[in-house]
Image 1 (cartoon, rainbow, N blue to C red):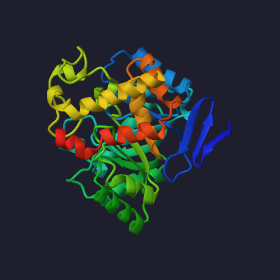
Image 2: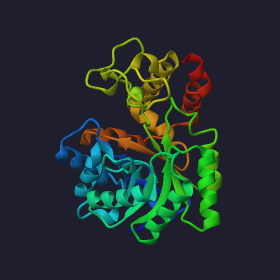
Image 3: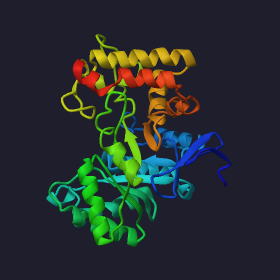
Amino acid sequence: KNFIHLLKPGIFKENGMEYQNLGRTGIKVSRVCLGTAFRGQQEENICIDVIDQAIDLGCNFIDTALYGEGRSETFVGKALAGKRDDIVICTKVMGSIGNSPNHTGLSRLNLMRAVEDSLRRLQTDHIDLYLLHAFDVQTPLEETLCALNDMVRQGKVRYIGCSNFRAWKIMEALWISDVRNLEAFICIQNQYNLINRHELEPDLMPLCSELGLGIMTYSPLAIGLLSGLFRRGQKPPANTPWSKGELQGLSPGKYNFEDAMTEQVDRIVQTLISIGKKHNKTPAQVAIAWILDHENVTPILGADLPEHVDEVFGALDYKLDSDERAVLDKVSNPEEIRKYA
């Protein structure tokens, strides 16, 4: 099929879904990526239904990793039976299943084992985008990049990238790839949302813009804090990550609900609610629309039920106006968040 509706340079629309090139490559991916960690869903059939629903809505970009000891990749592999060629699969590596010291890290030994395991679970002969899930201080970066280069040459991987790397380490990796004539990163993946702007905006966004790297972002709702279901001074809803005590993944030192839901974060939530009411949109949809208002950024949207897919993908038919964007930018200013933290 051809992309029949050009919205603006680099962005196309077909059958209700917007697509854009991933970084400097020719790959066209949906403006949103489906995350398949399924931390709140254990039923295989439901997980497959979630993936099917996203694909039916035009999503052709699916993110996975060694979540649930490989459960996520296994579900993705089963869901994509007969559809593999239509989907861009992104998976990540830092460890492999096993208990020895060599089952963790980004050594050639572990990478070669991990990619074979992922291919088997995904029921495919190649991975479209293979990301280093984190930086490994114990393995020379050159060793890792040479192993990734071999995977591309062998046809097991098409493109490579990194997740949670500091800007200077990305530059070091690109330099090594340049001088050694190795495959280079084409994409990064980092956390980005209205609460956590400081990780991506100061250095990584300008770096990616200058060098043509794609940007994938996870936790667009800050583990649900931006969904509108959580308010300062109230107990978090039962059976949510925040109701189960401490957790990791938001920002250093912000592991419990009382500390995470600061006065400033609550102001952000209230702003999302107010804007959403004007457009019949949920706070989550407004928070995702704010991310989509950034060029060349692809948010990863997790869902544990098919109806969750409908809600988060509902952000695609809503565009922030300039005033709404300015209000959200102001209330989520990183300096203000630090002040109230």
